[in-house]
Length: 504
Image 1 (cartoon, rainbow, N blue to C red):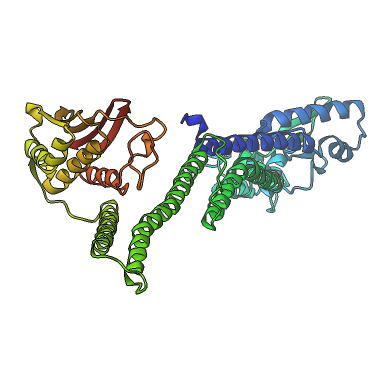
Image 2 (tube, one colour):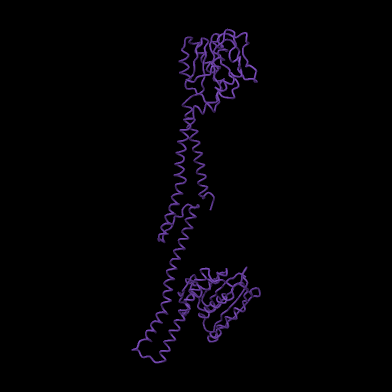
């Protein structure tokens, strides 16, 4: 099975594809939301933004000195994502939104407005930030008297720590952008630095949570419907077929479409169902055959016994003796049939221990000839034995292997024409030994060859009828397979060969 037909690969690739699609959709929605919510994206340089706003306000005041700056800032910059404030020389504090700013940052802007060349930067602990000399401090820097040093000068470390606490660790500097009108400093624009992730999280966390949750729910539903849905439906069809088959519907089969693991399971189930259905048919046929085979001698025995017990029927001694011989023959036939059935059931069920050892092939063939000597001589049938030097012995149970050769030879003698030859042979075949029994009978029709080892097989009319039970070849097959071997047959008119292969 190709890898791309595997259900596991389909599920894995489907999940990856859906996750990628979810990420793309979420990214598109995020960019759209940001574009709708503001014109300044997180991460834009604070200094650059401050210079832009300061230049814009400078141009406005040059055109309209009495312009309403607060209204203008709200209208023009309210949608900007990066907050800032404007501190005018007259004390007005204008913000771009509702955000409040830390007092140290506002104090720093006042320093810049009142003439200090301030560059606020954190130095080593104990070193004050750069700023105007203490003697030049002007009113308004702090809460102290005239000439007193403001808080940011008196306690620089505390000032810096408070600023970092308010605006985020990692701040290096803040440079106010001046608003200069007619050569005079009229205000400053301060854009506090902010951590991009903190700004992104604080501003877009609700929107991202909503979008991510919606995409996750939709993606999960689509994944369930498009990836797991078909697999679930196909597994359900296999389950339904198994339930129907278990309830007695032997025609129930599972669909094998798809070519993946589920199709493989369905195919295995269908094969099992076919085998079980065939076994059921064989079982029913076996019961019918056994009933027929047992009923025939029982009926004969009962009929002759009833005749012998009728007082009104006068029988001479010769007739009575003949009836008794028939009853004895039928009883012996019934006994053999029951014995064969029990032996076959024992072998096929794994019972009956084998006494393994080294078996000489020539002794097997000799006992076959001795047992059938009278019949062979009466019908002028020759028995020829050929044993290859490397196939003189075989491992197995001597009694059972003799039973195999005896049954095959008896079957050959039964169908061999008078005056013909039966050939017994042993030869090396791979890792084992092949024992063959060949006769010159009429052969077996091709349509009957697959069934010659079935129980009670008597269907081939091309071979001469005989009074066998139809279990001999079934027993042979069971014994050979218990030895780890296999048996086959090849037949055509004038030549039929049974070959039993056994491990050496």
